[in-house]
Image 1 (cartoon, rainbow, N blue to C red):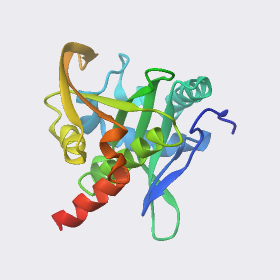
Image 2 (cartoon, rainbow, N blue to C red):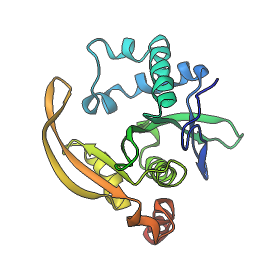
Image 3 (tube, helix red, strand yellow):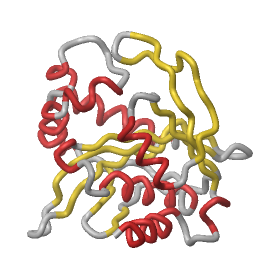
Length: 214
């Protein structure tokens, strides 16, 4: 599999059992299983084409998603990562997704971040760790200066992730995106590289926060 080569891409990132890697064609069954199992958990927050959730998240549908991710990554528009948990035997279980998308370079140096996680591992620090890894990568090898995350106000678990990591809430976007049958408001969160540079990066901040919370 060739993803092409852009600043910071392709890449494999890891911290403890959390691994971020490019998607593989062979991820179809695992991706479909976790998506279908999490319909109630994910569908209220995602913009999706009309149709049954099982059809839109089948192994066949994954092949179209995979193709589109490869194309965007080759253009340098995004860095899509499968979020995996490394098991005791060394095998990796796909449990989520994180993407640095809508990348604009030069004077702007920015990307939007989107993510989701399997509800069966929620609350275990997987997505905060994955987000910290992705942001540090964006600011380092990715050559970016700013990342932005937009979240529906009602999505408390997702807001909790960015707030505990120290993202700034800086905007309210009325009727920002069509989700779950209507145009939904979103809160805009952001972070620039300077805000975590003195702390050794966002992952270092997250590690300290976890240690303090114990």
